[in-house]
Length: 164
Image 1: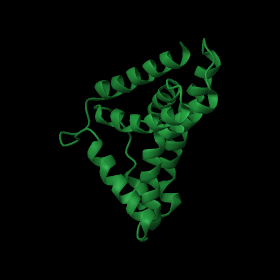
Image 2: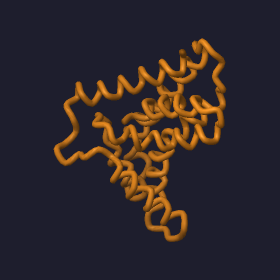
Image 3: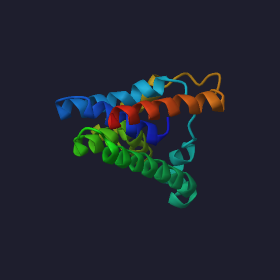
Image 4: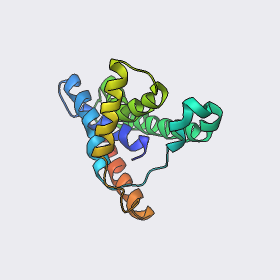
């Protein structure tokens, strides 16, 4: 899913818990649940070559990722402002961050390639888990209307739970 979906669902999950630490933890897990649902997403394959080809090569995808991130947090900020009940904004923001953390850890692995140590091992294990938790892409991505619909539903549900 795109980052905006993960941010909003992560925030909705985190704010639904009385204990913010539990909420942020389950927001992190929500990323893997969302990735199990067939969806459309843009390719981040150029980021795998950031160490060898440089930032300039990756700039188009980095712009897309930044816009996706900004859109997610803009919608989250709007939802917090429109909420009918007071939302713990800090829990919502950390929940949104926790919801995209698995993708961030994957990006760190691309930067960390070739290095040895505990951090590298943890990032590699996480990457294997993350890829295996994803819906099967053997038959390719779902049709665009299906892939976008699943994300639209996730975003609308998250906004509903955040606002109402």
